[in-house]
Image 1: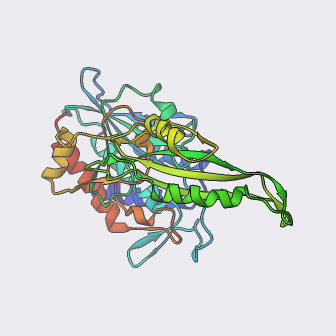
Image 2: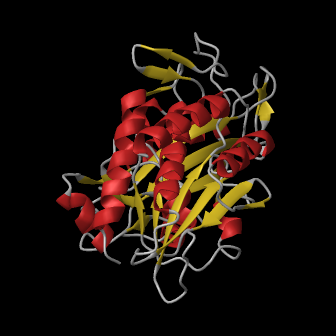
Length: 354
């Protein structure tokens, strides 16, 4: 059965790769996932571009485990030498946009769900959600499904982790900051040039350190990622606009970060775009983590964001593929990573007692 599921998983992944599915444009990949459920003779539901199902013997008296990964992708970058929408296997690698992030995880979790779907002796329920809009943190992704699907107690979120256990994940706050000055003609003296004023501000952001360090996630990481000012060569602008990316460890809430920067950052204005993408974690002694450790998986803290950020229950990030390949040119996943992923997911779920 596992061999057959693996073959079908790879076939589905090829279809997903060859079907553009940028965030909020996942209609056609959702259709492919629906067809996969039909092929497995498993009932499912679709809510917008999210496709989901529950196991055959769902029992409200048991705890519920969510299996989730996403089928949207970012847009391909300019570094591709291969067609990003062509699924090609070379030297054991399946190339294509979304192959690693997170198509391999998604098809492996779907296969795992199919393996357990009709088993009547599980000590927990399963809910499978193939979600949309993860890459854009959109309003119509997993967050919109939490009021639709049954209440969940714990989750596995499929993202590429080399099948090791990401027991914590940094949150994210993006800030728009303004440094002001006095606008003027470039030919005249000006001791309040907004661009020059920005030099010390950039140094402050570069050197600032948040005091609390997390065992799993390390320090908060703050980076100025965009800067914009001026429209013509002979005019000193009134403002310089900055974008600041802050990756938040589990020692701070996102609102804590907002409060600190609004009090301390030497900007004329610094406003968060959103505070909803908080850090997440699962206790190291949670049965799901303990089961993973028992089968030889390592634990670590992940610096990248996923749909874990919208969950209020404990969640574990786990999946085939390597995070460093995500959003890269000529993205790929090894075929044997998918095979291994399905086997480890199944071994983990066979072992865990919730």
